[in-house]
Length: 177
Ligand SMILES: CC(C)(COP(=O)(O)OP(=O)(O)OC[C@H]1O[C@@H](n2cnc3c(N)ncnc32)[C@H](O)[C@@H]1OP(=O)(O)O)[C@@H](O)C(=O)NCCC(=O)NCCS
Image (tube, rainbow, N blue to C red):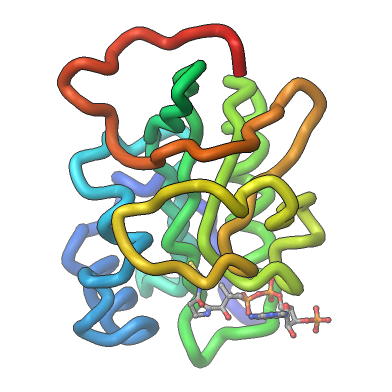
């Protein structure tokens, strides 16, 4: 019988193993991707970041980060989910889905809106869509169809907002959004 896949807190594995899996999945240019630029300097949300392991081998990872959505009339803390990966040899085994379920369950406890850059046909099952993100300003190029927000009641994050790590003078959250 196969050893079960364990889902653990992200900080329970060697960061080098995670780097290796991310390099395998995205290639060495991954640090230049807009998603990487977005989370540069952002604090990781430890409670919502998980790994999947099997017999001590890393087979999946998801990380979440706290960033700011800065609109001329309002600033909101939001969660940036990603990267999400499952090992190329283990695709289709619901490792990705399980990591998503765990991360979103934690993020929902804090009632943070959740954004990511990814394929809507995959992430749509968790309520992600590009419907409200068309005017958002990111630190790099993005395919608008892949800039996704999980829209829930009370989250109206439309308009020309800049998204990124919290700036030095933007520590206070305003309520209007
Ligand atoms: C995206 C990814 C995490 C999915 O992981 P996984 O463990 O294979 O996912 P699951 O087993 O939970 O789900 C597989 C299902 O999703 C579908 N799926 C996978 N990637 C998809 C995509 N990009 N678009 C649409 N559907 C997709 C599969 O066809 C499969 O469908 P089925 O359930 O009807 O058979 C994995 O393919 C991966 O690591 N990709 C490379 C990294 C990446 O692109 N990450 C996302 C951006 S951060």
